[in-house]
Image (cartoon, rainbow, N blue to C red; front, top):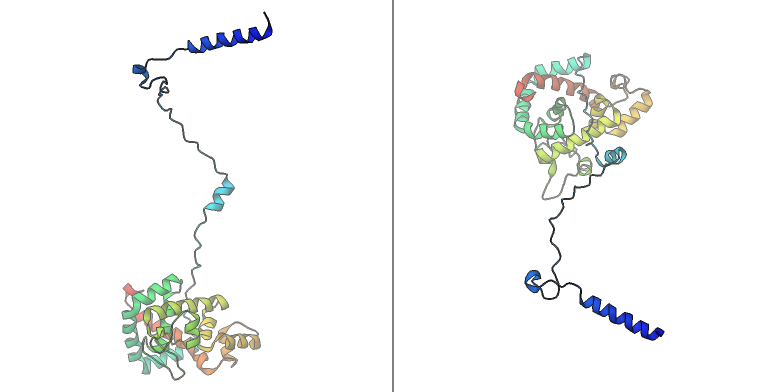
Length: 254
C-alpha cells in the first residue's frame, strides 16, 4: 500500500473511533451534547498558620511609653520656711483659707491636668501664692490668671491671647499649660526648688546663678545672694503654703 493511501486509511479509522465515544443522554446531563462537570463536596482546607519569628513579633507590638512619675517636692522646714509660716499664721491665715476654698472649686480641673503630666499635687500651692487661685488675677507686669502666665510663656504652651479671648483666664486650659510648664522645668533642673525658682525668675536667671555659684543647691544660691529677693522668698513661701494647704484639705482632696 502506498504511503498516501495509508494516511487516508488511518484518518478514516480515527474519525470513526471519535464518533463512537460515549455521549450521555440529554435527560441525564441536562445539556444536549455536553455533560455537567461532576459535582463534589468541597474538601475543607485547613487554614495555614504561619509562625511569626520572635524578632518580627516584637517589632510589631510596641508597649505604650509611660511618662516617668515625678517625685513630690520635699516640704522642708528650715529657717526660711518657718519665717514664711509665721507670716502666714500671723497675717495671712484668711488668705490661705480663702485660697484653699477656691482651690476646692477648681480642684477637679487642676487635678486632671496635673495627673496627665505626672505633677505632684503639692504643686497646686503654686496657684495659691501666685494668684490666690483667682482666674481673673492680673499683676502689674501683665501676668494673668490662676497661674500668672506672661504672654510669651502662655503662647509657648498653646494658649490663645487676643482682644477677644485670653486663655490664661480659663482654669482648664491654663492648668494644662501650667502642668506642662512645671514638668518641663523639673526635667530641666531635676530639682523642684530650682524648677520653682525658674517659674518665678525665669530659666536664664537660675542658670546664671548656678554658673556663678558653682552649685545646684537652691538654698546655697539663695544664701549667697545670687538670686533676687523675690525669688529667694518664693520657694520657702511655696513650701509654707503647701504645708498649710495639706493641713486644710480634707482626705477626699489628698
